[in-house]
Image (cartoon, rainbow, N blue to C red; front, side, top):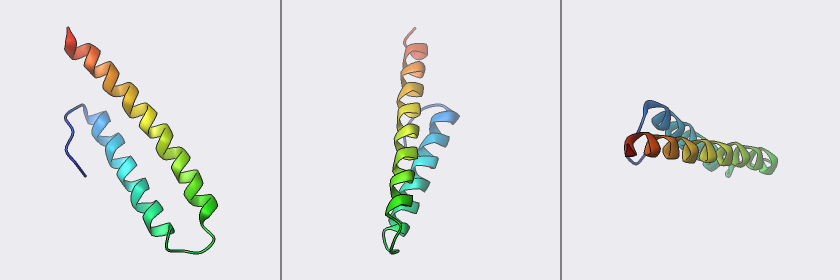
Length: 64
């Protein structure tokens, strides 16, 4: 996991995203898991949006 400055919430979001990437990698080696991988990718994308929103909030807070 790469380091990224930010709040504890951002770090948890990064950890969750990394865990999902690991799960998708593991599932890629198992037959008939395409649907599960797709669902995990959807969750990952939602976490990515949450992370982007959180970074924006923190940027605005730290800007002033």
